[in-house]
Length: 241
Image (cartoon, rainbow, N blue to C red; front, side):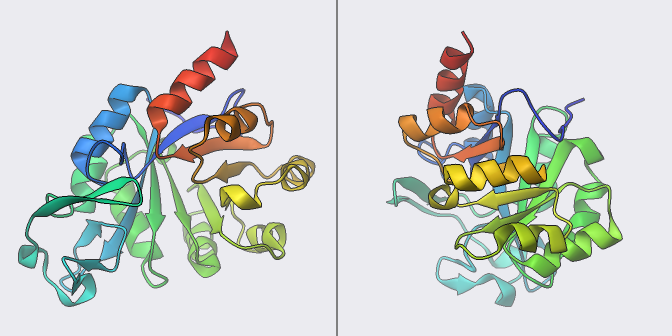
């Protein structure tokens, strides 16, 4: 059984939306490829649809249709296309339960809750499939993290942040286990402060070799989320020799 510890000797490598540069993002193909590349964890996004289904999809729409206005049976496959160096489209979004079950026991799962009114519902689905040590949840919404920690304090949760401004105070108020800053926010001043406060960092989305190497050596970093998990795994292996 996999276990997520509070602090690791070396950071975890998390595949951002799976191996999204070689397979459609947030797809089973992308997640399985990331596993084959040696990633420790897959990161993906969850949204609730109009019929209550939870779909693994980053955007609010699929084929220009709003997910909150659709039933899962309304979804159809789409052509693959490149978008910001990632592959999107392909098979219709998977149900959350499908992804949870497919990688149970073989990979950690980092589940980003996209919507402010959906945290507890997602957690209850996840806990019905996975052990508490097999996943973390993250959100940009402070209240989502706070609600999850209040209802399910044993669940590991991280607060995602993309802009500066009292980010450690926000994480502490939400009772977050991790602070998850955008790569550009993760300066040496921030990582030193994280060590002082004993708040592990999960940094995203790190794709350049020099930056990956820097974060691999930083004691504040718990996990590195990346579009290039194969490169990150290789660099971690080289630095460990």
